[in-house]
Image (cartoon, rainbow, N blue to C red):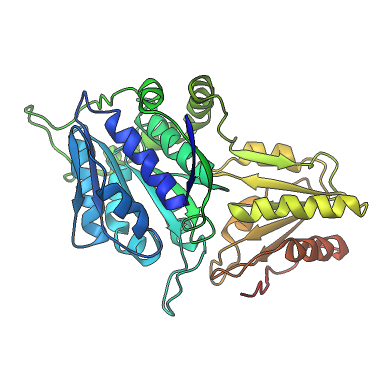
Amino acid sequence: MKGQLLTGNHAAAIGATLAGRANRTRRGFVSGVYPITPSTECMEFLCNQEFEKGQVVRVESEHSAMAVCIGGAASGARTFTTSSSNGIAYMAENVVAAALLRLPVVMVAANRTLGPPWNVWADHGDTLMLRDSGWIQMYCADNQEVLDTVLCAFRLAEDRRILLPTLVCQEAFVLSHTIAGTEVPTQDQVDRFLPPLDLPARLDRTPRVLGGITVPHVTEVHRAQHQAAMDRVWEVYGEVQDEFEAVFGRRPADPVIPYRADDADVLVVSMGTIASTAERAVDEARERGIRLGSLRVRTFRPFPSALLAAAFRGRPRIAVVDRNVSLGFGGVLWGECRGLADPGAMVQGYMIGVGGGDVRPGHLLAIAEDAASRRGAGAPVIMEAGA
């Protein structure tokens, strides 16, 4: 294992490259790619790699990029793509198709604000609009986690108990273009961690139907099977963590990560890099004698309801911080968290950093102070983080 200075985009591409080469004894690697800021550097790096078997296919649109992945995955290849913002919106039809066909595609999203007006900075709205599409979703807090999560995503998605596509999320520029020290594993290590993909019912010389039309009851059965696979993610992911740690010597993050949360009077809940900032805010608050705690939601789908409910137990005030806005409703994470607290607990929603504003510890301390001063929850609050 070798330490390198990498952007989040390059960390993602290296993870995909190592994973693709690890499937060289089976059906190889296929990646459909199309550029869009801020994920372009990931696909550019990937296009310059060599694979013993397979190829990176440059296409004319994001819709076609996912179509290439669908074809590659259906034939048993290990598949990967990357996109962002309106590119993800354009490929949405095929994103849903990949999930409902139960194909283990892995996609890295550089979370960027949807437009117009056009904005290339960080916002979780692009991937959260896919929350009901049937993909596993994981949100990263640093560059090392991006690389590690790509490898874990392949292992999880390709497990026969799961067979679901997986979305690895990193924030635009905050991670995608920021250079940080990252441990890069060897190909031998990745070969030991990622067994060659043996996809059941892959397309080969045996006549098969992919897609087609069906009747209502069969669709009900398919959805029940899909939900059952989602329900198995926690168990299988725990095994993936164990196996990753055994090979690489470090443990991937849990679905929910608490920080000084056990005795918190106010608990700040967030996703992605805001959670790292929240931990700094917690330390500052504790130095002032304020019992603030943080909770990072790393896995958004399947949603970790039981883990969050356990973490919320006994916490009287919970501030849920979203880097997105569901217009006409509020923050998406807040909407999913607000029914999990103890009866009588206050769960207040805050939206900040929407459109890429720089969220600092002071902003989160202000959120904590506001939550501490409230008698009860009110309407979700949109706050300005600024440039």
